[in-house]
Image 1: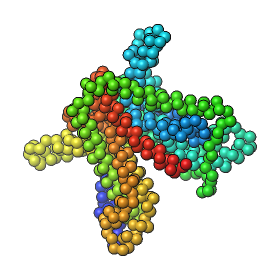
Image 2: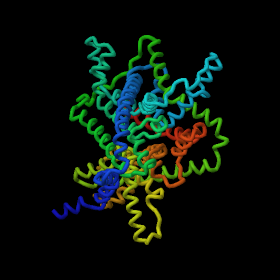
Image 3: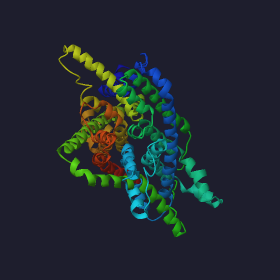
Image 4: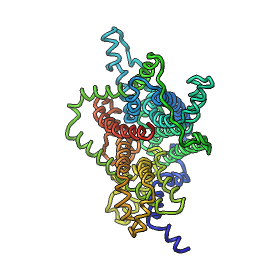
Length: 542
């Protein structure tokens, strides 16, 4: 019995538990602080602001959920089932809006529709039609729903596309033989079979909506995230921010539970492993083929090409005044911080997954998966939950050093890196886990049986075999960190900016055209992993 205990309780398992405690620190902190009395502004917020936080957040969730469902499912169905001109290009071009942070999309559309924008310029110059203000006022709730829908629908599109591509064609062909039309096949067979994919995609969208700060702040829509910022920075009331964070965390956990509950233990796939994938249909009429091409082109134009063109236009006007040595330093700081954090995420993910491989007990896998749940927690909540224990540690260190050391943890980049690890651990974990799944444990066991230590086996065998997965994990985490706004705004050191925070600060100070330079760097950088993501999907299902 003693040998068995020694076998599973080793430094790898202990390290996995330490990482788990690190990732769960924000939740533990908020739960503990909930027992403190609310801040002095809590009564004012409950009476005057909390109802609008609830209603606005709910309206955003429902509106964006419906918008992303319509766009994501329809586009996924078209490119997966039908053959039409340009389909091979649209299948990956429709993922590109993921590279566009929603708050940057918001700035672009305000510029497109304002008096000096291209739409009004076209009407004035060609049709002699003049508007006194913006042609369409989108700086409101419907505008926020529109912006978030067109920037987040690829979450639903990617997952549903993969689901549609691996569905068996036999059920659909049987339905057609029995007299069903294509619409009925879609609504009665294909869509129900893709229900877990749809629910998973919309759940991801919901978490991103609750995490959003830049769009709702710029459009003046009060949500829980903007309320946390207001309580902390405007009121200086951290206890009130904690209570708002707790409510937001409960909403997110409810979304996760709801997604798991609706899936249950039901099987939504064919039982036959040799099921024949769906063959693409070539519409009989050429006009129908071009209709699908036109629909995909319109969605791509609205969700990516138009806002990107606006960024390029602004950059062409302002780059000479913005691109200087300070902008180069800004890019270097942003990239260095993102690269360092993403490498740390990859290293911790490798440690977690290797601990699971070495342990014979199932609960170690639950530890690893729980440690990757930070992606579901909004950035503002993580920032609040990380800042408080770091400030306590700083006070303790300052007491030990007789006040000779300042805020070395909460006032430095260290706290930002820790928060990034908590927030984006799932990104690195899932990518590297896919690599470990492909290699299997047999090669590892052979090396161990020949006398190699776990460290030597990991270094000489596992890491070379999963190097592509490690690179993908670093790249995906790098791009997500580069785009992150609410967490960075709260935890960044004084006078420290990233590309995301610089673009946000300039836009909120009515320097939207100048902010496009930082925004364009973020968007163009985000295109790279999207191309890789499409390659993975095509390789698995084409």
